[in-house]
Amino acid sequence: MKKTKRKKYIKIINKIEKIRKKNNKNWMNLLRLSFKYAPNEAAKIMSKIYVDDNKIGKLAKELTK
Image (cartoon, rainbow, N blue to C red; front, side, top):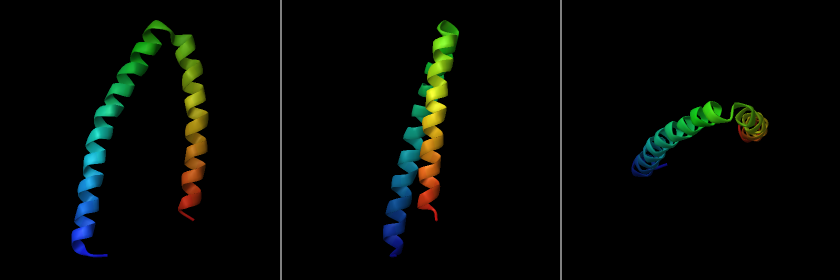
């Protein structure tokens, strides 16, 4: 792969990382708010998110084989 193409990919990945950092902070603030005002409901939603995250992790693992 050409060096210029690699640099382009790295720049794009860095931009994605910056956006994800901001979005993750927003997500965590929403999570804190949820547990503060509706902890039981928030826990149920978190449980569902955890299950789906595990499914995604298994699929991602298949890609690395």
